[in-house]
Amino acid sequence: MTRQRQPSPLSPATLALLESVRVQLLRLHKILLDDERAAYERIKGPMGTPGQVLSLVMSDPFFDWLHSISRLIIKFDELSESAEGTEEQATALIGRARDLILAKGEESEFTRKYKAALQRNSAAVLQHAEVLKTFRDD
Image 1 (cartoon, rainbow, N blue to C red):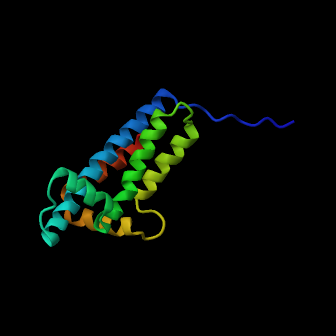
Image 2: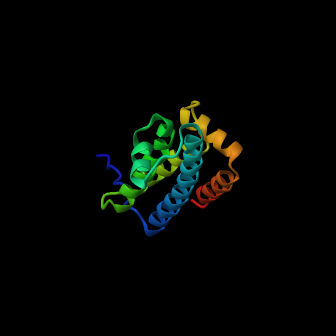
Image 3: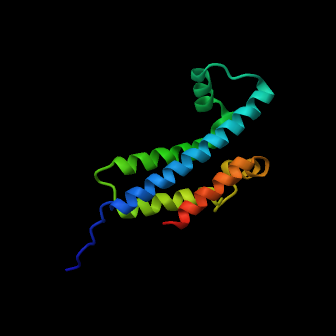
């Protein structure tokens, strides 16, 4: 009889790594959002109140490409808070984040716009390097 291997629960070290990657992704997301907001306002004018900004970011196609990183951050939160989270899920999620930031795979809208943001925004470049450093720590 073959014995199936049980998934490993999240270790304290993995939880710390998930939090570290999450924080770096949040910082990157804020930089990208601020950069995209400035571009939006150059084209369409001021975005308005914080509530109006949030509504536009969530619904206007101009910001759709940022949803890829937003969804990843949510997944990091969910996994960190889950009592059933496993080492295997954490490894897979960190891999997804790495692939997104390194633009692995097909040339998506995120990849295209992210590369453009890195070309024009030095803060994005610096934060990109911080995210990569966090990946190397895993």
